[in-house]
Image (tube, rainbow over all chains, first blue to last red; front, side, top):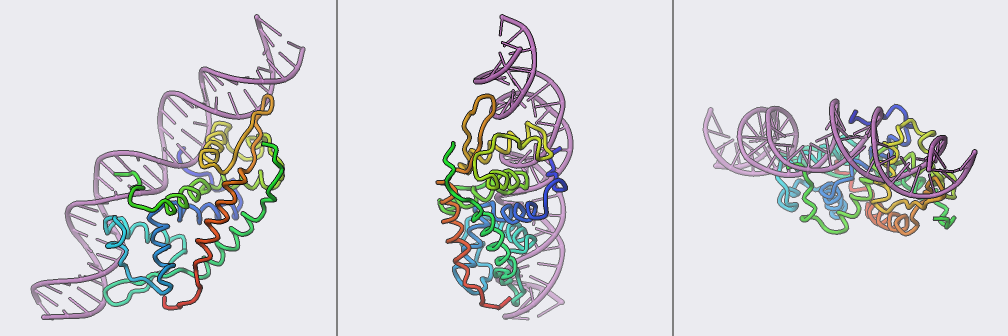
Length: 109
Length: 109
DNA sequence: AACATCAATCGTAATATTACAATATAAATT
DNA sequence: AATTTATATTGTAATATTACGATTGATGTT
C-alpha cells in the first residue's frame, strides 16, 4: 500500500491531479507568483526572497519543472525560470472545463 | 523536518495550496467529477463505481470535506454529497486570479 | 430486539513529501 | 589555475499520504 493506483483512473484524472499536486505547496505557489509578477524570467532571487534553504527551493523548482509548469535556461552562472506557456494553457483549459462543469444550485445538502 | 512552514507564507498562498492539495489525487478528482456530473447530490455509489476500498473512499471524502469543497448530509442509511457552492466560487475566483495573472509572452526561455 | 446496510474510524504497512546540511557541479572572475 | 558565485544533487530525519482490513456507529427493516 501507500502508492496511488493511477491505473484505475482516466488520463484526464491523472493529468489534473498531477498538475494540482505540483502546485499543492505554498512555496511552489510563491515561486509561481514571483515568476508571474515579474512577467519576464526570474533568475533565482528566490532563495533570498523566500525563507527556505537553497536546497529546498531547488527541490521545489525541480517539481515544478518535472510537471512542466516552468522551464529554466542557464544564463551564465545563474538560471532563469519562466512559465511554460504550453502547460499553462493546458492548465487553464483543463481547469476551465473542470470548474465550469458545476451548474451551481441543486441545493439539496 | 518534514512539515511545511506555513507561517512564512501569505494566507493566499496557503489557501491556494490547500485547495490544490485537496484535489491533488486522481480519486478525489474522480469523486468531484462524479458529483459534478449528476448535478444533484450523489449518495455514495462511489465505492462501487471507483475501484477503491470503502475505507479509502471514505478517507478521500473526508479530505474533500475538510477542505470545504464538498458537504454531506445524512439521508437515512446513506450520506448524500454535493459541492459546497461557496468554496467552489472561492476556488474559481482564486484560480481565475492566479491563472489569469500570466501575461503570456516574454519568450526568454 | 435482532438483523441488515452504509459510512466513519482505527490501526497499520508501504510509500511520498518536506526540509536542510553537506557536497558536487558548472560557469564566470581574478 | 585558483576562486568565487549560483544551482543541483545526495543523504537523511521528521512527517504526511495512500490504501485496506477490521471494527464501530448509526439508521432502517424484519
